[in-house]
View 1 (cartoon, rainbow, N blue to C red):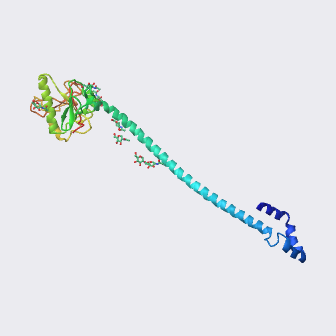
View 2 (view 1 turned 135 degrees about the vertical axis):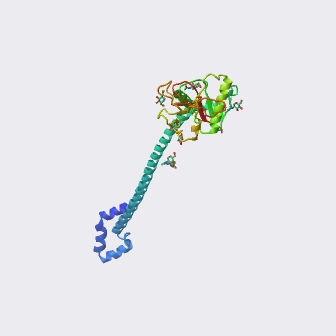
View 3 (view 1 turned 90 degrees about the vertical axis):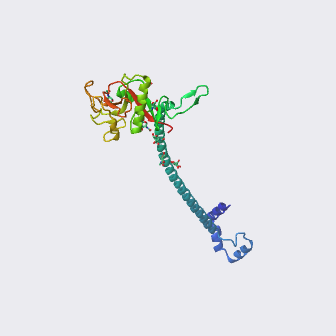
Length: 286
Ligand SMILES: *[C@@H]1O[C@H](CO)[C@@H](O)[C@H](O)[C@H]1NC(C)=O
Ligand SMILES: *[C@@H]1O[C@H](CO)[C@@H](O)[C@H](O)[C@H]1NC(C)=O
Ligand SMILES: *[C@@H]1O[C@H](CO)[C@@H](O)[C@H](O)[C@H]1NC(C)=O
Ligand SMILES: *[C@@H]1O[C@H](CO)[C@@H](O)[C@H](O)[C@H]1NC(C)=O
Ligand SMILES: *[C@@H]1O[C@H](CO)[C@@H](O)[C@H](O)[C@H]1NC(C)=O
Ligand SMILES: *[C@@H]1O[C@H](CO)[C@@H](O)[C@H](O)[C@H]1NC(C)=O
Ligand SMILES: *[C@@H]1O[C@H](CO)[C@@H](O)[C@H](O)[C@H]1NC(C)=O
């Protein structure tokens, strides 16, 4: 309806404008009584008003669109930062998963060794009784010791202790040395093989630098109180002597040879000789 009236106004402007201006007075007076368009605002003003309205509508639409686009941009920025945070999190999680996988394989490798602490004692109930030390290991002062019955050279002994989840024994105190010497002596007595050489490799060697004795964990013996555990030979000579009579490369590995009533039980020996060994590991329950 509005559009129609605008058109009408534009198509026939003369009818209204000129008729108003040119009509004689009498006709105008008559028109005041009979003409339906008389007394209303001129149609061009309607057109202007409608155009202004359209203009206002357009401005409103533009403002609305601008606000909409701005909020859209803000959202997009937000999403972008969230995306990069997710990417960072993903990298972080990947790294965590990687170390977890490595830790898992490490733990799996140790599981079989740990299993010895909890042997299935009753196969019918599958009940496990866990101990501080693996089966056949001796508990002393929070640590477990394995006195082997088989013999190996020093390198193999070191590797075997590692494969059992421990290391060749590292002796750190008088108490520990006393326990090991006593235990080794008792085993010797029980086995009743006093005349047979029965000696245990310990985790001490000077194979890298002659005269520099190192424990298997890299700790040096030099300057340590424990050096007093070296034995005195039956001929009165002091150990270690790096004796080259049997092995021209000398004696670079330490063994514990049990004696009655003496703590000075260490001798150096050729690393290639076969002896029993003492392995050590931490007790799981102190
Ligand atoms: C990223 O990880 C942190 C915790 O590390 C969490 O608070 C944040 O919500 C995560 N971000 C996303 C986008 O998932
Ligand atoms: C990465 O993960 C560690 C935990 O594994 C967490 O402390 C740290 O806040 C994370 N970093 C990021 C950027 O999410
Ligand atoms: C993996 O194990 C090491 C110790 O071996 C520990 O410090 C680290 O936090 C562990 N990593 C995870 C992701 O559990
Ligand atoms: C796995 O074990 C090896 C040696 O036992 C160690 O060097 C390495 O750091 C361990 N890795 C983790 C992730 O704990
Ligand atoms: C013992 O192992 C070390 C490496 O730890 C090696 O250098 C040395 O040659 C080995 N000795 C013998 C006799 O096999
Ligand atoms: C270590 O020695 C024990 C016997 O004392 C043996 O059962 C085991 O197979 C040995 N392990 C290796 C890797 O030689
Ligand atoms: C050695 O045997 C004696 C006598 O049987 C005993 O009293 C002592 O506790 C034993 N020592 C060790 C470390 O087994």
